[in-house]
Amino acid sequence: MAVLVKNEKADAVVGSLRELGLDAIIYDVKSAGKETEQTRSGRGTSATSSHLPRKIIATIVDSEKVQSTSDAIKKSIGGNSKGVIIVTAVDDFIPF
Image (cartoon, rainbow, N blue to C red):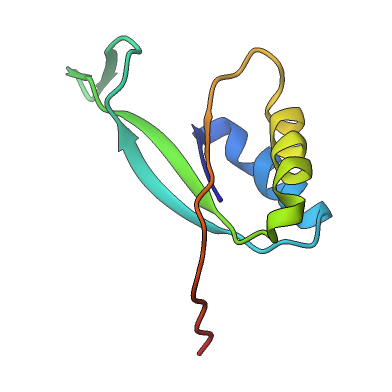
């Protein structure tokens, strides 16, 4: 399971996963979606970017716990926030 969220929602998602006893991996990514461009300024210059900073939070969940984990993530993000939950099968898992 992977979750794509705004940076400010990442701590809430990780907290909800920890409450369920799950570990997570967090990736810093940039999103090019439907949202508008952001203009950032600093040191007398400004730059416009259509790539918005996001986090991908990945974890492995037993198939019977996918729905409850998804519900916990949605609750931690809040009703008005947007994000994406991606669920895919893990057929092989090789710990090292």
